[in-house]
Length: 95
Image 1: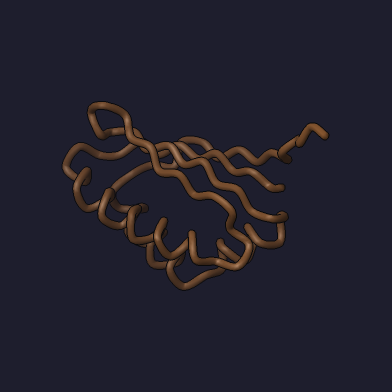
Image 2 (image 1 turned 60 degrees about the vertical axis):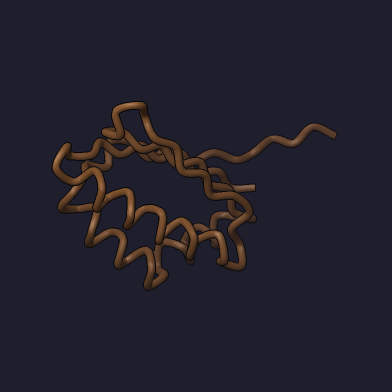
């Protein structure tokens, strides 16, 4: 399982527009073939957004990055927030 953790720093004046765009993106992402989890978390002041995403494999995440809904979200977030961190992991499942 391919795991992605993302942190955005949101401009104060962009809080509401960013949240609306993020929730729209998250809903579409959850319907993707390879997406197993897409959690959206906010700091108390609404200026930081943390994503926890799981995909069946790296190829599924790459498909997500090439989706029309992600392209739309990316255009929006580039004016409202700064991507401050993106990390990729492989989930270790104990047997």
